[in-house]
Image 1 (cartoon, rainbow, N blue to C red):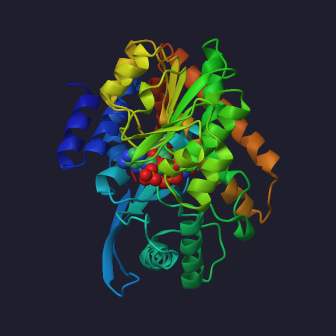
Image 2: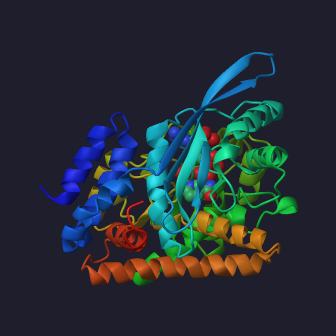
Length: 444
Ligand code: NDP
């Protein structure tokens, strides 16, 4: 058995009941096998793959809070500090009922390589809770966030661990978390990113993941002789990533015809109206069914179905494993040219393989959606120097970072003869830097 297979088997056995973590471990380790084989003796001796797959630290805590009826509720909070070889832990917080330790570990593991690809000095971490902000009053969300921070503040700091948003954690939640951190510690420091512009946030952070996804997609298409101009694009999700992906795709000349949420999806052949989408989702906090009710050209469908629509480029921007093998078959039979992942691990392993085997150009999440964390790191820089950069300055830096990420991937693909397998290219490029830093720092 190869060293990679041995470690996958061992880590899977030691961490039962964590299917999403096992899935990403498989994806990453199998695709870096060519590098591991070339360094097997040293890596085995140093147990490099075992160390990398074990978080440096994982914290689990209770989060009690009082709802509007006076009832005490108890949720579970997590922070996984996965790897600090190249910088302080950095990664978002997810508030969603599905959150458990396996999901946080999958996200934290992915984050190590994503952060490495950005070229910025940030390690990998992730956290969250099974709390569901949907349907809660602002006061309830505040009570939860304050209680969550009452424990989390002990473990984070601007040079230790810098959380940000993710599913269910947007500007409102970051504000409440930051206020409580400041109250507890007396520190006005860049300990969270995604902050509001009046208290240390960076311009273009809100747009960064979606815009970055499109800057990356532009590079992918260019390298394969295509461009976004005049293309039809399907997007899933209607949250932060989806909204700004749609906005930038339209700016780059594409027609985006779908958006979705967890209850249904919209097909709008005239193109999604971003101003209406923002008003519905960000301001009024309503559903995609309300979008369809207010936009005459849009059709609303219950359940899943975005990938049944004919288009050129698919951008899944909702959640993990939303593109399964049936969706992949639809995408192939509808002659899509490319699928580029906006969400984290939105494509199952089986679907990814099917798409790649059938010639759909595939852009992996850890590269394609790295724009969010990259601008978070730029927010940290601005906080440290107590300055604000203009929108254009941040946006230009973001575009350069996404271009460089694609270049690193292409270089790795060429160096290890992986063709245009960008999954392998991204994993190898991200891994090599972290591995070198870990080796240099001894057995810690
Ligand atoms: P949001 O909470 O803003 O939006 C999530 C969207 O996905 C909503 O439309 C939501 O619908 C939908 N969704 C969530 N869970 C499910 C589900 N189980 N089934 C179907 N639809 C679902 O989150 P973000 O836009 O921030 O995050 C989306 C993805 O992008 C996640 O995978 C996240 O990890 C990833 N990501 C986010 C970054 C960021 O900067 N925000 C950075 C990098 C990656 P509904 O409203 O019905 O729940």
